[in-house]
Length: 330
Length: 300
Image 1 (cartoon, rainbow over the protein chains, first blue to last red):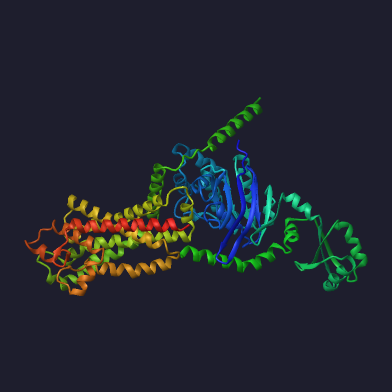
Image 2 (cartoon, chains in turn cyan, yellow):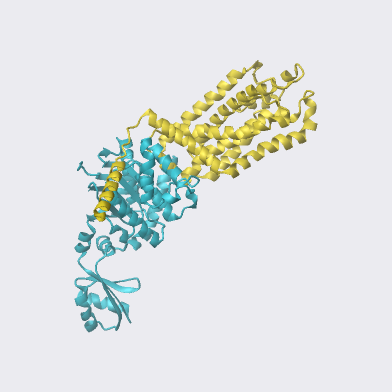
């Protein structure tokens, strides 16, 4: 089989007028891998995915998908990728099956293969029984599943999922992940996804953390968590301000209030907690110690939680959107 | 024993799947583009079928014009018409054109919906040429609009127009030509617009002038000079006129009557033949089609 990278990106840059959405990104995705772009909204994830999907041309740099250059060999790239966007791109007036058949014709799936393949992908997302209903009657989760099935219909080599579970309730989100993990077993496919949900990034083989248009760090979830090394300790006390000051003075630990608790990272948290009781002056009311999560990884590499990053990135994202729309009209 | 057999079956099944997965998609070719055109065209029909409300609502206006306005005004306007020709019959060709006017532009406008609801992206990222998509869209809009026109055509008897196969074929051909041109025009327009309200407003601004200046409701001869000039610039005039000739030639009117009320479009006294009129509409249609394709090539 072909061992060439499924996705290959070098020094990728995309600017919209003054705004640099992507500022020199480079990485490789191996065939069969599930690769995640993790970062807050407005970090440049969607722009990168749009470049890889040939929807947007890069300002500079190079990107190859399934061995084809995204600008020069646009149609070859398109032939080899499946797409599931953040916003649904289904026709609500048509049935699920009609939507898929439309796709099969657009992508030129040989007629004899359309029927069996249609059943196969619809079975995979448990929508075979609902294939005759208008998509307008589907729930949000069903629509997303149908889009995943449609993205697979023409047997692409790389499946792009841009925020595949955004806007879905937690239960539906986890069921979508069951389908995605299941399809990895069944199909010989590389998955490239973006998400701003930490727990979802755990499903990836490797993750690139993206912030302000750059890759901050790239590794497996395990390695990333190990690299943080420290446990997260959260305590509540009678005087949080006093406690933060004391932590700094006595232990040289930078603590901050997160989720209304004094939060800090420390090695071997369980062993550290008894010292807190002995040495802090304000009485402690509760203590919790947690192993590092991707949240902590994100925090340790970017200096903020992903939720904080979202808030500050909101304006940037909007500005980008305006720039993009302006360009399209102009 | 059983377990082994089952395992074997499952293995076979997996192998089947593995084989199916090797969907080999051929390279881009004319055949593939044609298939894309055909599915985009068929989607228009499917959507039209699914939207009964739209079918009914777009028929209301032409029916009102033909039966209500036509009947109401006939006592007033009928005096200028030759005996045996009622006002309803006179405006019938115009109303036929009107019935496809709204539907064509509305079909084209659905591109704006598609953009708003994301489906346009599904089409634009496909490995097919943009022209295949735009042509499919225009043919789809033309078909749907012509089907809509057929309903008005079926009402021919109500206004004393005979059900003549030759006449019907001519009219259907002309309706197809008109609705293709209008859809292409609408698609070219819709390519630049991202909100349905804006498209609807633009439509309102265009549809009524197009209709009223086309001579659909009055003869084009003997108009005040300013109006005569403006009507010559309305593309719709060039389809209403041949259609009127077609319909009137199948009525039993007193000799000379047809000439007085359907004298046709003239340029500075020279009567434009029907063939040229239709040719003008076709050229505009093709030009609009190319414009629409160019617009969609640019949107990247």
